[in-house]
Length: 288
Figure 1 (cartoon, rainbow, N blue to C red):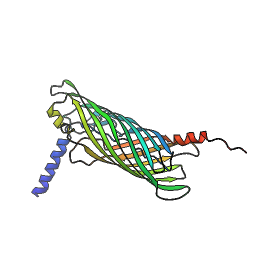
Figure 2: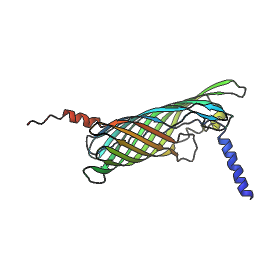
Figure 3: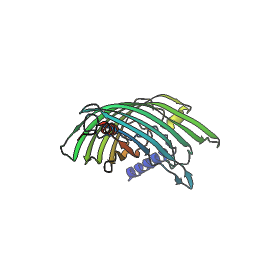
Figure 4: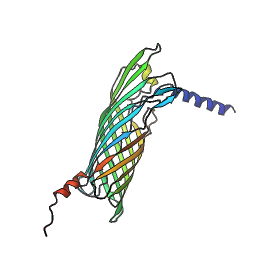
């Protein structure tokens, strides 16, 4: 009986230790750009509202306000019948809201994040059919940006404190996906992105003890890796050139070195094949 009691005590100790500070989230996943490309000249331009579904919570009769709002802009263009380019922009504004159960850290953390990505990839059709088809694509690229946050809290004497932390971001990603299209109006995709994040040029006024407590001391000691599976669905109406897109994705830390990171993203917005739309407008009318 001693071993189960020891394991229970260890679990409780780790749980208590992990809940005695407000997480400083140094990563938040972006919406994934999964364009349906079937031939040379196809394109995608999309804009989505994104959130981690962070909200107001009440813990021990205290209300903690939180929010997570952002925008993702996606662009892609098929330069041949097999290869394509893509560009993405990611921006987030967040605030922690009751993300912890301990009362020893009453900080309110506000975040600003931005990231620009450029990539290229390969796509192909796996099945044949006039009204539906199964496609495979794989994109890879690099992103550059900055993640920062401010920390509004109180010291041991009850006095207000204000700290900051910011880091430049270099991101490498590999994103294979399987996509199904039905009657050119419904698109369903399952994506599996691997994101490799490197933090550098870190600026902060935290002292070393604070960096250690908040899991920030080793942030620039090599890259961290995330696996990010996603479900993407887009659908249109008749011949209307704009489709509604929504997606849900998870972000799973794969590295042994721990950091606090957001683990979920939900996005909804609009997309259109702008290049094909202009092609249709430029096509001259047939003469009788």
